[in-house]
Length: 238
Image (cartoon, rainbow, N blue to C red):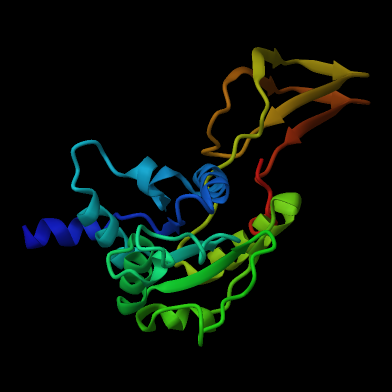
């Protein structure tokens, strides 16, 4: 079982998205969709989307926290003030899962980055947090605003690729369907031939047209349309 668990850890998602119910749901879901599109579903963990039915969710949460490469702590305007049944902010309860996840990530030496949502204020370590997660206030993190989500996400993606080993966008679709097969042969005079050359290994491209050119050219040109993947790290969400 130890060997199996070790193997499972190697394949666990690289990015753990953490949020508090009632505070950062929109950002958690938006990040999940974009990150999965860019890096693949297996690279992202979001509790209600990633835990399988019948799986022990406490174990799944803590194991993925301890094994992730980067832990994104989403902090919205209500993150600190949402209260429990005792009237105190939930973050001060020892059984608060938001607190437990952050404490586990810090104790495991994961890269933890707080992400302030919208106009959320920065946390004050002296007043705002219990001791086991107070380090969170000293950690650098970006801001994510729904009003300029594309720009903020582009900056976050660049930073993630800097800190997560091997994290790179997957092969992208060129968004083009190539249809038919054309063979041009013999003497080619006063003609223009245009073909399409797609990247090797590109996904979601259906090639049902091919152009083959051979023979002698006279006052003619052959122009392949070459498609390449967008440059990495520029925040293209395709």
